[in-house]
Image (tube, rainbow, N blue to C red):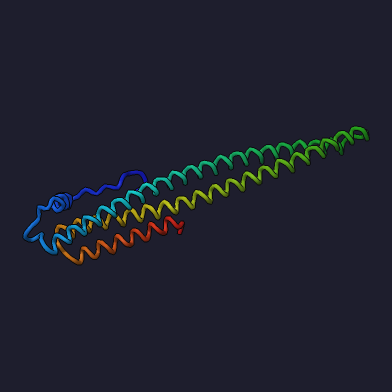
Length: 200
């Protein structure tokens, strides 16, 4: 549903064209002509709505992929920050070991200054890494929302295609119940499209 167009080609095309040119009489006159006009109008409207739904389905799928890619980039950046944090932790541990092993007070003070510096740097790195992780989570959430919406648009498009197929069958068989089924299924498709538009 996501990428292609919304095609409305079928055996009823000739009937519709013939009806609009006024070439129907006999069995297609009276109620039959009215039915043909109704189905022609319905098909045109549903095909237009279906094309919009198909476009929206493709757009939301593209957005979902883009947002998922953004999430992956942020996760990579966060991972790099945590690796940097680990490197600082290792340096801090070595500085603490050197401070504890040295006998000179001036050396102890020098190593303690390094330890304090590493501690401050680690706090900054941790804050940045956690912020990047939060961004990644947000992008993942937005991607999931877009994918859910894409599925709704795809469902709506499929239902409208079924409605158009029913329209073709109703036109060829002149069955009134098929015409009502066509309207009912078309209505369901529009409702599902409305749910997609409302992010439900």
